[in-house]
Image (cartoon, rainbow, N blue to C red; front, side):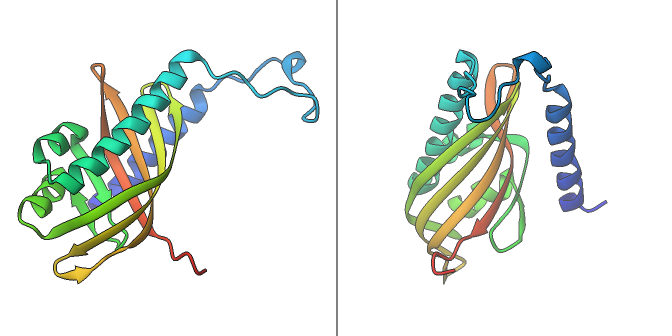
Length: 170
């Protein structure tokens, strides 16, 4: 079975499990939308959101600084990604592309990060502007990423990433 298909099945499973484990509030707790207060986010969810947001910034910094050790810690052994050019890459390829200078980043600036948490799984949506080259070609532009993080033994690591180029003019 192709790895990309397995990745999509795995991500679908993560989202299905997360959706099934969310409990619905009792009907009497539901208020009309016009008068309902914003639901309170449990403190631990806020902590996870802050942690994942920081890890997203750490990931960007590691790429810009070509910090292989930091990337090694951020990306899980089973990490799988799909680049904005629709190419599959794993943890080893991500690190190797930086080490060998295939992926060269002059600057990478996150302009937005939002995080949804599902217990030991978090999904981050990031938007960034970067000045970069890949295999000699200019890849500078604005990108959106969806990154899946899993808490394994008290340590958050990225297990999946999908990037899309976003043309601001459209």
